[in-house]
Length: 328
Image (cartoon, rainbow, N blue to C red):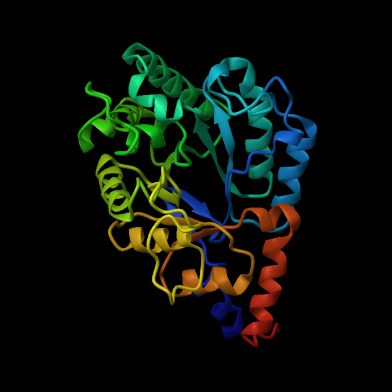
C-alpha cells in the first residue's frame, strides 16, 4: 500500500475503531432512524425495511444502530414502530443483524420506551418496576437476535430521559429526586444485565446532553462511564423552557455546527469512552473536521443518509479529491 493510501486512513472518518472486540469499519454511523412508513403496523420487520438497511450498507457505512425498538406495546411512539416485547420479534430482527454482518458492519439495536412526559413524576412505582423488567428481557432478545450490542434510549424526552431530567423527575421515591435517584433506573438496568455484556457485546447509551443544561449532561455521562457503559451517543434531552430559540443551551458564536453536536464535543472532554455526535451533519468536510480534530470519535449521519444511502461512498470520493490523494 502506498503512502497516499495510508494518509487516507490516518485520523479520518475512514479510520477503523475498536470497542471491546468489535471493530468498526469506519467512524460514520447510521443513527437510529425510525422508519415508520416501512415497518408493519404490528411492529414486525418487513422486507422493505431490510432492503432499506441493505441500501445503506451497500453505501459504505461503518456502524449501524437500528431504530428505536419498543419494549412494550404500550410504550410505542405509534403503531408502526419496531417491537421487541416478546420472542416472536427475534427472527425478524435477526434478519437486520444478519444483513449487517453480510457487509461486515457491526450493529447495535436501540431499546426504547416512550414514557409519560411530565407525568413521570406521578407514575406508580410498580409500573416503573415492570418496565425495567421489560427492558431486561428485551436486552436478552436482542442478543439472541445476533446484534453486536444494545443502545439504551435515554434521550429525546422519552422514558429514561424523563427519569434523568431534574426538571420533570421530582419524584420522592427511589426513582427520583436526587441525581443518584434520578439515575436509579439506568443504574439498575446496567448492573442487572451486566452478564450479557462480554467482550463481544457492546452497551451504548443515547443520552440528552441537556438535562436541562449541558453541565447536567456532563454529570450524567461521567456517571454512565463509571457504571461501565462502552459508548456514549449525545443527543437532546428535556429542554429548559427558558430557551425559546432552537438552541437549548448557550453555544459559542464561533462554533460552526449544530448545538447538539457542540454538546457531544464538550462531553467528550470529560470522559474516556468513545462519543458519537449527531445532528445536521450533511457534508464530508463537517464530519472530517470533527474526527480529525479529536472533537468526536464517531459521527452519525441521519437524514442525509436517508436522502442518499451511498453518502459514505460519496464522502470518500470527496475526501480523496479535497486532500489531493491519488490512487496508484
